[in-house]
Amino acid sequence: MLKSRFGALWVGVSAAMVATAVAVPSWAGTCAPSTTCPTTVTFTVSAGDGLEISVPDGPVSIGTGGAGSQVSDEIGTVTVVDDRAALTATWIASVTATDFTTGGGTAAETVPNTAVRYWSGPATSTTGTGTFVAGQLNAASAVVLDQTRTAFSKTTGSGNNSAAWTPTVVVDIPAGAVAGLYTGTVSHSVA
Image 1 (tube, rainbow, N blue to C red):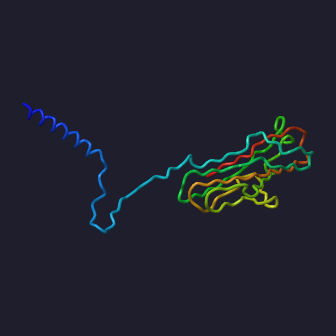
Image 2 (cartoon, helix red, strand yellow):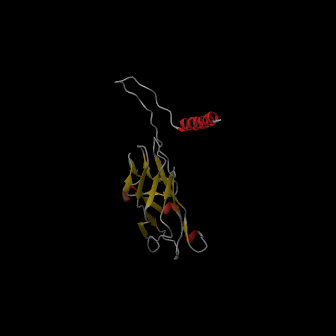
Image 3 (cartoon, one colour):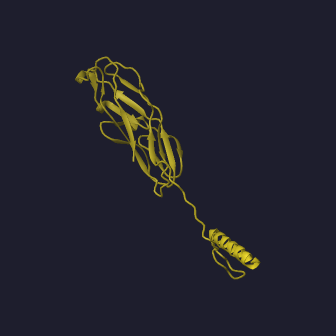
């Protein structure tokens, strides 16, 4: 009777030991003395939220001018954040504008986007590796926003990165423009 109780106890302990042994990670292998015994180790680099662009909250006023004059000012900081952790981490930020209108938006109440120019200026900050390229470094290289233009780009590099710039918008007010508060949009995108 005593022997069968110990036998039952011994069997129970053996089962627990076997279950515990299965839960322990297996060894990489055995190696002879004075040899290298390798273990493969891995880790994961995760990607973040992807590729995003942020722009200033509006409305942003770039000034006041009479018919036939020009208004111009910075519109605030535009930032591209690339958290894709990509091998080829390149991107192009683009910009375009609508016509600007006041009142009912008649011809006399419209400043067409052909009269709207943009220049990015240099980067105000960058992070990560690679080459960051301003779309237009200075006022002399300003582009008309009647079509989509390159505002800024990253042409080489890998991994996470970011760039910020403070663009300037210039509007040549037509001589026939009527008085009023003109409103339009300057839109940025990144891909």
